Amino acid sequence: MTTASGSSRFLKCLMVPLLGACWFTGPVLAQPLQTGLGITVQVYNWASVVPQILTAAENETTRIFREAGVAVLWLNCPLSIAEAEANPICIEPCPTTRFAVRINSEMPPGLAKTSLGVALSESGIYATIYYPRVDEYAKEGIATHSAPALVS
Image 1 (cartoon, one colour):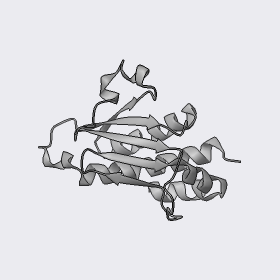
Image 2: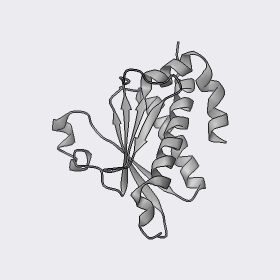
Image 3: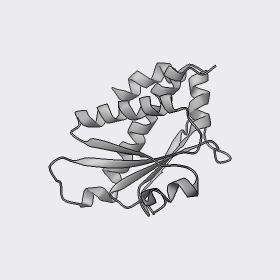
């Protein structure tokens, strides 16, 4: 059985490197540095991760980025088009000034056992987390064991 704590630690440890990879390799770096550096992250929880786990992951990611001098603003986007229309930022293409994190409930066929997600920055900055793999690692006890080592 997956514990909320184990899944939460693993998900936040996955979010930090994915966001970090996008941030350091994305077009955002082409813009001049400003005081009060910050990022906005649009989260699409397509895997229906329970709110407590998602909030814990966002809080830990915020803490880590804060230590690096970067403020993080989270925008948890609704999944239905009707709800998203109330917040158009969630249905517009993601510009280079924001990140989109998609937590998927499905994985592509033939995915390597060690692959937990992917980050792309060709047409915006997008990171996809394959939650079944995160859940699998948590069930195996890897999530609880690996989380502190990934963050440090």
